[in-house]
Amino acid sequence: MKILIIGGTRFLGRAAVDAALAAGHDVTLFNRGISNPELYPQVEKITGDRTVDASALKGRTWDAVIDTSGYFPRAVRLVTEALAGSVGHYTFISTISVYAETNEVGTTEDAPLAQVEDKTSEEFMTYYGALKALSEQAAEDVLPGKVLVIRPGLIVGPHDPTDRFTYWPVRVARGGEVLSPSAEYKSQIIDARDLAEWNIRMAEKGTTGIFNATGPEQPFEMGEFLVTCKETIGSDARFTYVPDPFLMQQEVGPWMELPMWIPEGIPELGPALMQVSVRKAVKNGLTFRPLSEIVRDTLAFAQTRPADYQLKAGISPEKEAKVLKAWHERVR
Image (cartoon, rainbow, N blue to C red; front, side, top):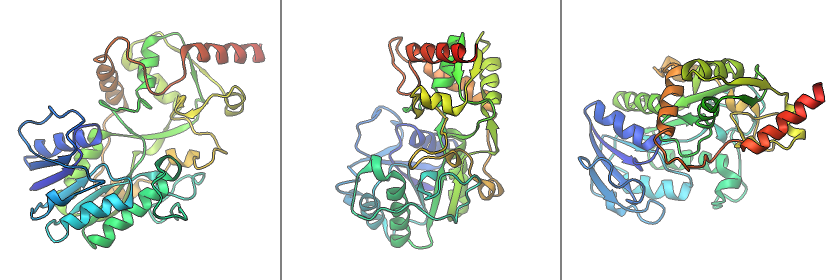
């Protein structure tokens, strides 16, 4: 197949290129040429800014397109209109954050979506989910019947620029007492490589429709995850599991300061974001590599970074020690 990938040189886009090339497809990239421009010298590259002008795509044909970087309906419409009539299949990478209700565990693809009153707004941080939902609709409006919408959960693995998962293997590798939410707290993640490889298989089959994509199908518990990290890494870490109310009292920030943790009562967030239904995707061939493999590969990637690299997510050692001290004093 001839596959156009919008983006393609950072995280999920990079995994998509790797998966497409491994499957023997002919890949073209369309991006600004800013992030990792040295990657993939063997593939065709079209330089352009999708938010401003996608005219460089006109007059070309591709069997499939994978759009990993669409955040605003206006920008999605620019690209899809440039491709209208010349593409057979279009994947739009969305997010499980599109759902209006974030406290209902087991959300399926037909659940109500988040809304924004001003549909021209591009306040990304405020209306992320709603803008993604509008972007899904923009793609379907321009390319009716040709769109595959993938709604991933927390995407993890090597080259993750957010460090929201990477924090945990790095922290466990450091050893000592590790602050954690409840051992029973449930989570889901999806390795970028699993997501990309499944996406390519779906494009090959021409599958359309909407799919939640995270995993595993049965969410894993935090205690299970951390023990897997410890056993995989071989560290001396020991885990102190602290209930939500105390973490909130100590002003520990959900999601970014203590990654993969979302307590109830956080506006526009909720534990359901880490526990959605992926039955439809699994029935359509989504598979998951072992958690231990993801931990191992993520830590190996993290260890290639400069020694002074600062993780973009995770509680500081000083604050972690302070919270742990307060917890032990409270229960003593």
